[in-house]
Amino acid sequence: MPQKQTTLRPPGKPSTGLNWSPPRIDWLEGTWHVTHSTLPLWKSKKNVQITYKSLPQRDGTTPSGTHRLDDLVSYQDLSSDTVRTVHGIDTSSSNGDTGAWDWRGTGLLFLLTSHWEVLGWGDSGSDGDGDNDGADSVSIGGECSSSLPVPEMHVDWVVTYFAKTFFTPAGIDIYSRSQKGLSPKKVARVIDALNGVDDEDVRRLVGGIFEVMHDVTRLK
Image (cartoon, rainbow, N blue to C red; front, side):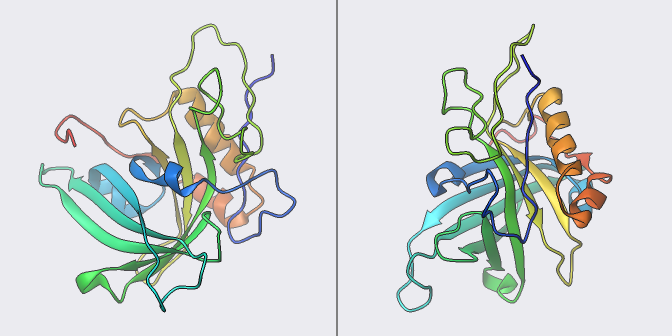
């Protein structure tokens, strides 16, 4: 059978005409492990996690149909076991769209903002073989199953793109539900897909992707 093919969408463009749909809020919620990135700030960090939690709309502050997420980033410095956090609120960039978000920090970080988008996602629990990768909702362009001599470990994943800000360059993250990350074959397919995205900035960033360290010093 043919090798699986992962297709990702370019950022900043409508999904009209693409075989793609954004993830559901309830699927996006929960804790994700950042296993690969191009963002320089994660080179000196380990055990990077992002936890999303759906928030109710606030009367008079967001249009009807706009989604909101509590966004908690946590990490450790490479030489420390202390867990540090960055807290913000994500608001969907357009009505009903869960694939593009505007982040604003909370507390002392309230003046800081950024924009991020989901380029692709995989739902490993939607079909019989446990590796649907969004085929049921057409989330990443139809990744089909194939027979492998040794079964891969199937794990939910997300690829995100972060637009450039005054403080940080544009970047790409790969998230996994498992701290162990994705199989090497899956990572290779995601990187191949990123190289094929119809966006020059994304293709340029792929050359700088690196693995984010995860170890047993953080169990939660």
